[in-house]
Structures are given as structure tokens and as C-alpha cells.
Image (cartoon, rainbow, N blue to C red; front, side, top):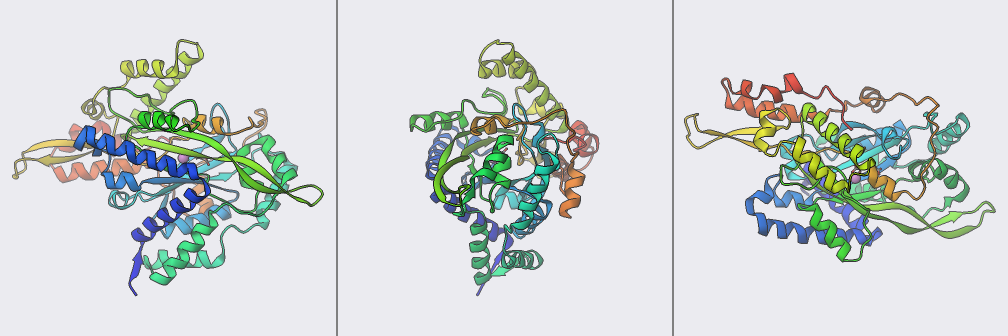
Length: 462
Ligand code: OOG
Ligand code: NI
């Protein structure tokens, strides 16, 4: 029998999760259908320009999942499973700083880092881990009970982890082993029918809905599975026209006439899903939980740390003016963007604000024109998408800011999972530098402002 390589395994896993999530959350299937319609319209409307940030084949297959775990050990196991699929931990995000609503987790994303692998299948999973040691959320007694609860559960069977390790070591599995691996892996992320301990879940939910979703149940599950769309404003309107309740806004940069940067996201509202509960008297009852939502995203150009600084400043200006009651967020943001964000890719490149690859076209002998192609942002903006969580959590939660928060950073997280977590901007900078190197000569200097040595990834983004 033929073997299944890493890329094919990842593509199959992405399809399996999509099938699973579609049966669990039927509105997701509606969302995917609407994305396909919108993408086809944009392709008809814009022609080749529609594929500037990725081929339609890639964009159609593109998904990111979000999962949540409780302990470093669980996160290490997740890293083994995704490692088998060629997905490596990239980026560090601290959602405890999220506004308007802090969430007691830190996160990374597992994704392919090689551009060729991203082009073949760009599947990624945003993965969050609870921080029970953070006193702003959990007192010592609750921390201990949480750790005991988490320590007793087992999210991933040994057989799955052994198959993952073999797939990583050999870069492939036999057809039969691949089928088994995919069955076990998909099952590990399915919603469990196991009854939820009502009192325990409710105690955690008072602090944070996400804490309850992680530490209040004995298994993990996909929280959302996000397709990519080429025109998110059209998608948003289309979903509403289908009668689906969407959150109030599209998060991230505004719609405007200039280049799309980073990431814009929105979602349909979390659905009340039937779950069984174990009550204090031991009886099992039917109830509902509202935790899973239907996110969708549109992607733009990756920004250099300098460009990200500008982005953050503009977003802060928007927030200030919205708070001052100067108008709707969309109007204010469009105005702030017109004044502060370069209106062309060429200007972004010239000022070293975004990442590009460069390629010579025309004359074969080395002096044709050089064209810049944008490097698409492959990562996340969970803090600016915090509006999505806030809109989807039924309870505001509670945090005591006077208490100390456990310090966490990318180095700490790398150490506890025993793998280097890469800084996204370093990856983009390397890609840009490699393309400049193939042009040779003095060319690199012309884009010094965006080169990895002067601009690469010293700054953490989240
Ligand atoms: C975190 C989700 C973060 C995104 O797209 O920014 C994320 C969570 O809900 O667990 O998926
Ligand atoms: Ni997401």
C-alpha cells in the first residue's frame, strides 16, 4: 500500500475536522457555502487581482481551527499531533491582556511555516492554554482544584500519540495507519457526550466562560473552524440576508480603498448547543451551552514590526475617537486609515511597513523590472479580535486586577512544550530576505527598512 506523506495527512485532517464540525454545527456549513459564493463573485469581478493573496484553490481549502487545553502537558501532546501534520508552533499571544474582556489563557498557533507548504495546504490551529496560576482570575484553592481536575483527565489516547510520533519521525504513515491516526485525531476534537458537572462548570464560568470551556469538562473540542473569504463585507451582508445572527462588527482594519493588511474577522453568534449535565444530586439532565461560534476571516499583507506599530497606533486612535462618541467605528476607522495608512503597496514597501517578495520580470539577462508581491499574513490578531469573544461569551467574567498575574512569554511557553516557538515576523523577514538575495547585487539595500536585520521580529505581536 502506498504511504501518506505529511502534507497529504494535514490536508486530510483539515477535511476531517471540517466534516466533523459541519455535522456538529450546521450553521458552519451555511457559512462555508456563503464563502464559496462570495469568493466566486470576487473572482468573476476582480480576475487575477482576486488571487493576489493566494490562489483560489488555496483560499477555498483554507481553514483555521481554535482549540483550548488546560496544561503544559496537554499542550505538548497537541504539539506532537500537529507536528505529525507539519504544523509548528508560531507566535505567542497573551489573551489575559485582551480588551474589553481579559481571558485567562496564553496561546500559540500551529501552522506550516514553509511558504510552499502553506500553498499546498494552509491549515492552522490557534491553540490556547489556561493559566490557573494567574491570581487575577483564580485563588489558590480554585487553582488547586483546577489542577487536580485537569491532571486526572486524558485528552489524547496513547495510540494517537504513538502514531503521531511515528508520522513525525518517518514523515509518512501507511494508508492503514493514516486512517487510524485520522480517526483518533478527529475523535479527540469532537464534542463529548459526557455529562458536564453543573456546579463545577458554573463556578468556573463566573470567572470566565473560556475557563469553564477548558477546565469544566473532561475533553477538548474545536471551538470554531474558520474559512477564508475574499470579501468579508459581502459575506457579512450575505449571512445576515440568510437570517443568521452575526456579531455587531467586522474586527480589525476597516474596509477602505487602500491595501488590505493583516486580518479582518467576524463571526455568527455562539449557538446554544444541547449538552448533558450532572446535577448536584447525581441526576443527569439536558441543558444548553453557548460556547461555539462561526468565525470567518479575510487576509491581507503581513506587516513588519514597524508597520505593526503604525497599525496599533491607528487602532488606538480609532478606539479613542469611538469612545469620544465621534461616530460609528466604521466611519472613524476609514477616516483614520485615509490619514495614516499608506494607500498603496508600493508605499508600504518603500517605507518598510510590510513584507514583500521581489522578483525580476522581463529581460532574461538580469536587468528586467523588479516586481514586489505581498507576503500574506498567516498569523492571528486575537487581541484586536477580542470583540469576537466578548460578543460570544454569555457572561462578562471576573478578574481582580489588584492581584499578581503569572508572567508568561514566548520563551517560557517554548520551554514548557520543549519546542521552539517561532516569531511570525522572523519568518516573513527571512522569506523577504531570501527573495532579495536571489535578485543579487545592491538590491537588498534598497529595501533595507524592511530587511530582517533592521526590522525583524524583535517585537512581540498579539
Ligand atoms: C481563541 C481564538 C483566537 C482568532 O482567530 O483570533 C482565534 C479561542 O476562542 O479559543 O481563533
Ligand atoms: Ni479564530
